Length: 246
Image (cartoon, rainbow, N blue to C red; front, side, top):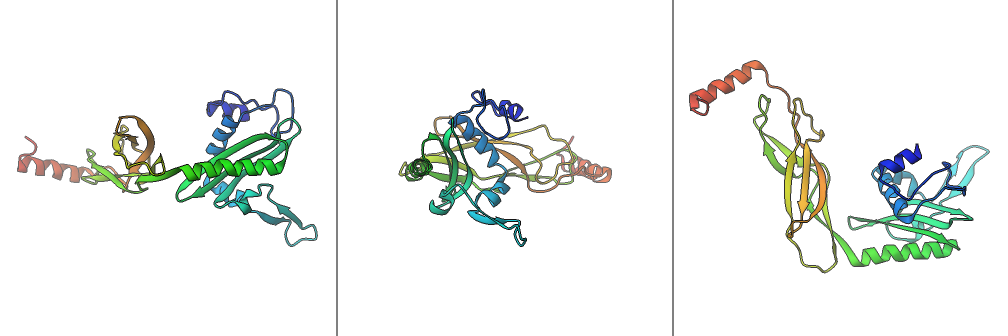
């Protein structure tokens, strides 16, 4: 199942022989592939409820209580760090996938093959420092922002707003002049009913040179249902009377 998921994510340099990560022949991966796996994991934001804990107790309140400390020391020492995973085997060395978030920007650093845990921690922190010192995130659209409105035949609403399902952000080097960004809404074929939260299309973001830099899903601000036949009749009648429909 892990190998099936790896193929689904497009990983070309990963092969799992066991589910534990322990050394075994033909069991391998790369820093890039680990980053893709970590990125996929972070789409499930509840994971941070656990990876951000530095210390806690297992079997708390029993006579078998056990104190457990996170092996990711950056959780305690690095500002904004809240995950993700450490590892160590004889063949792989000391490895680490760490993510940290500051000022609405989340970074991920992967370090593999170190001889000491201390060096692994230091180099991971250096990678994160590089990213936070050099780059920043600018928000173009906020989640829930209205992107426009659409009309749907035989709907109970004359018009419905379409909104961003998540923040639209762009990454740029700190100090760079603000660029102009263009957005384009592409709608799916819509069938009623449509409920708030349903994905109805995409918002494409391009830079001033026309290069695509981001793409997010869009939804509707209100539930849309089929109108009843009487209301449809009244709308048609109104159109005829006003001359809109001849």
